[in-house]
Image (cartoon, rainbow, N blue to C red; front, side, top):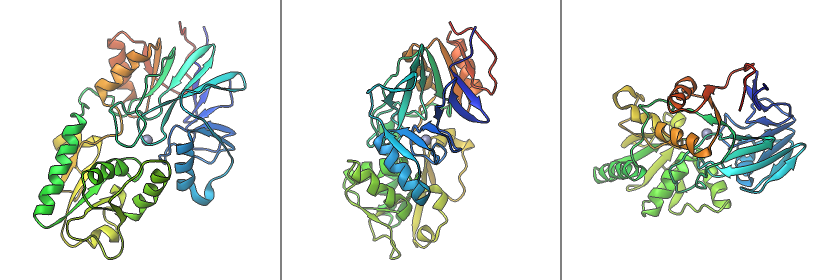
Length: 329
Ligand SMILES: [Zn+2]
């Protein structure tokens, strides 16, 4: 009998018996940061992450950035005390990584995971491990995303229809990741795009990291010209920069749009299920592909996903504080 190799301490994840925290929000002596979304970054004494995540996190934290950065490449094992660490692409946003920790048991941590190929993030890879901690944001059977080409085709038709009606299409997507993905798609097709300044500053970091976004200019006080597409973060949909666009038609890009009638986003004309997370069938498939003997689920529908995994014959449970002693093998 022994404890799981991972523990949840006051809402934060730690590799058991070590000083290594995973995606900690509170300041930690040493933390692995899987990607640069706001709910995963923090101001730590030492931060282990990919160079892209470190650059994006530094940009987001600005003046508040501190501590020592320990950049790590994908598939390059390195030592940290008694542990051996290795990063694998997670396919979620540029620089996103899964972490494999070896110390007798091979413990895998997915962070946020997307298994569909993307235009702007490194494609996810299967991380073989004994014990897997996986995200379960869309861990319900009803969350099945349509093929990505279909979703992107729908966005393109929305844009074309708006432009042919002489109105400005405004696409709302999270500033880090989703916005660059749709801009890459549309700019690649030759559409002239305008990015809200909150998106544009992150575009600059993407470009510096080797993801060019041509045909994209910052949205200024003058507003978009006729024929241009605007991309802005959802939380700034009611900002002056967007509200002053006189004739506009708005669509939000989010995996939750797969809810159909259940999904409500005030003031938008359309919603498209463009997600940077894995859907339910992909989560099941991924858990099986890792070969893990035990799976802990985390975030979103953790209880439900663990139940679905158990029905598939995989030992699984949600990760909880003070997990009971249990037999791992
Ligand atoms: Zn994320």
